[in-house]
Image (tube, protein in one colour):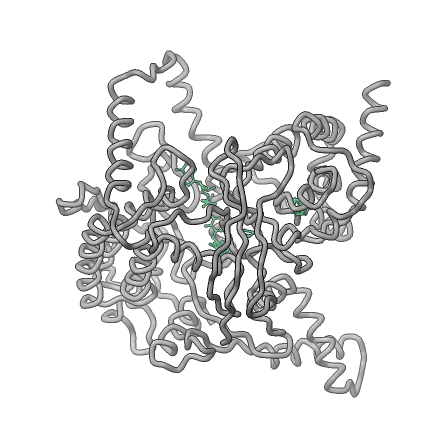
Length: 332
Length: 251
Ligand SMILES: Cc1cc2nc3c(=O)[nH]c(=O)nc-3n(C[C@H](O)[C@H](O)[C@H](O)COP(=O)(O)OP(=O)(O)OC[C@H]3O[C@@H](n4cnc5c(N)ncnc54)[C@H](O)[C@@H]3O)c2cc1C
Ligand code: SF4
Ligand code: FES
């Protein structure tokens, strides 16, 4: 079962109130049949005929331990339950961001000399981002691409003299940063950064996550805008701006996430088809598989952010397929 | 879900220069929370009262990054064996318990604030030699460097060290031998690490001494407190590596 389909089904079941555990935010992942299957095949290959059920289970648990021992141990620590004996309670969670900074084939962003590698650049993954392929991407970028491409930039830069930190650009950026910090510190509202971060996360999770609709995305954009206003009116950042301050450390990216989150919603709204990790409920086959629209959306969108008050601009890069025929995913 | 009413005696310290002291706070937690989630609850409460939250370090919250360093009831990462603070759950405490929470105490790990200590000394030890040099650019054939399963597993045992520093906090001498030996073993056991092996162990031990960590006197409290179960056998292996390397360089 592909990861995206399984995850979406788990969330849907919980949304419909069918979840287990006191929170209702879990479905069962039961290993008992797998344990018996592994155990039986182990017994067969070891030539143990007429193995008892207990023996089979014991052999099967060993196989599972070899494969997933560390994960099972983590699970037991978190829940206090033994996953070899009781079905696991699981729920999907975001652990990867598809898409990111625009880069060229040399992995250089639109800022000369700023290269972006790994998860933070565009990502070439399908709907289920096959296991290990995120780490693979990081390795490919860092091991095989950048060593060849950064040289061109460095060779041109070798004659650049030491840059004076008193230049106007530095001074301007420092001033801008200080003002941003002062602004956050001076709001003095009543809600923590964590609480805003959670609310924003929930909006993204519910409306711009594994399953999206025009209605949901339109509402989400409005919610993000309102939440951002509320943040700048009522957030409380304790401590000072010029000391070790973990809350301030959280506040700055949290403030950026409103903007990034809105951009993701705008992109998802624009793409009126299902494609890769982007699943639009309006655009699915009868079997519930993603339905692409290769006539209108055979392109990659890179969005140019122009500040909170302006609409972002889309730069589109068409995808041309010469040697490969475009196909739909099918597990049948 | 049962609720726990807890009394926390937490170390508060503004920065490295100011004196710290224990502060008492009441917190209500649920038994399924992790220890860090319980601290989150406390911090939300403090923030809502416009007080400064307790600074503590955390990142992965699943036992793999080593950030969540603190001493709980006298034990680095708490009393539960082979468990990081973030993996410690409140069901291991009782309603009405008083819990003492303080930072690691070691000269080489100065307190930055409250429970946060500066573990950059570990980074500098890694920088001194905890790496292998490889050629990038071309993928190697997958079977170019065969490693026996046994060998790979022992290297992996060393690689499991998450650099959390609990071994240092547990040691009466604040020695970093378990950490350094785990890193040395991990690389020395693999063919990729052989080339620089002699140089590596000498540089890392030298840096460890420069950072002011204490000597090892075989107390083995480190092994008992290590959340990843790193064995003191690694220390013996590192000592062998070290003496062999020194002898060789004297030749
Ligand atoms: C729970 C979880 C499980 C996962 N499991 C898998 C898996 O099984 N297989 C798989 O392939 N992938 C998995 N992934 C995804 C994969 O781990 C990540 O995509 C990958 O690690 C990203 O690597 P990276 O180097 O691009 O970025 P990161 O590892 O995120 O590195 C970014 C670095 O930048 C630093 N940084 C951030 N801001 C600043 C700043 N302002 N200044 C300086 N430094 C900064 C950060 O501290 C961090 O060290 C998982 C992810 C998660 C969260
Ligand atoms: S050896 Fe164990 S206690 Fe020491 S740093 Fe590594 S994981 Fe932590
Ligand atoms: S937060 Fe990463 S090990 Fe605890």
